Length: 520
Image (cartoon, rainbow, N blue to C red):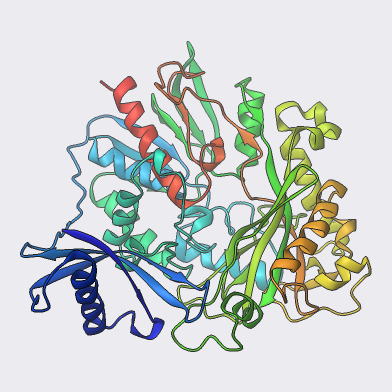
């Protein structure tokens, strides 16, 4: 097998004949094969777009097989006979992948999920958009599949040390994702495709002996002699168990408060806070591709920016080309925005979080909240946005040019945020330590991305759920000494993951540790 890289025009990237021609040229020129080489097979290992110079090309990293069979890996899960059981709280990526790992290790997963199944959940999302009513148990963050189901489905992660990225991607393909995610440098499923994949995972778990209970929230758990004995649910049931795996996500504030009230040690955690910035996709295309029209073969352009402003990072977060800004509040009386893209990324707008790191010094006004200080800080900003938006989830917004000039926007551009916008000066709803740095950061970004600063771009507040504001410490090496025997936090809600991939890997890892140290 020989690894090689070729550059190919976007219109030819699916053309097998041209790919083979380019491979042959590489084999002859760099690997000393003769011109009569015919018999070879290839496999695309990684695909990425290179827009640094003209012409724009895709770079394909290939595995080429000469006089040998092409490597074909058929991925499969191997569920075992179920013996003991554990209760998994939350059916997001951490909880679902933990359940799949349980089946492989002969453990029965019992998942309780406060939200609804994906089909029922869709009606509640429509209610947020059309009636501006937020169900605190069924929304963009809570429900089957977690926040990822209806907020984009990006699969890019730098956390390969946490586990096998390839394994998680292969599991997603097994349950219906396009095989392209195995080769793309920034794989993405799309909010329109994720629900069916989640349903397939749910059906598999149930078919192999697991249980999933929707609209069932954990309201308490019973501890005796420092050991977990049972879970108390909102449906007035008590589920006996020796193991609780907490996979509740970064927005389960009631769980953080429950742990605090039960004197379980938790910590206030830094996170990032800011706004969503939305441009017409055509503007981002022209900046990144340096052309007036990207044509039919190039994908909607994305970007990633980071600036250091007065000792803090100002950076883009969850960039959604061809995407939509979504209402991500989890309770009445707050405004939270997030972004997502469909699989084709074909909407007319591009949006991205533009956020600033916030930490302990910023949480001082809430120091009386102890380890919930960061959460209280986060909540205060979201509630202020609601108040300034005239007690509505019509989000506070300002043209980017008006924000830089410190003036109220007399009108606002078209925007993908369906509940609607309220013209507000961003300085009135975002803390000073954040908006001053965002203003300076935008100026610096504008110097490198000509056209980024335009009256057609709008800032929408507030992007505040970038990660959990609380960390639940754990012995990540051995799990031999949990605070309470049988209580295991994991995923984003515990402060140990950030996104679908890292949460899925963390869910698997925690189950493996539980099995090793508690169930042998």
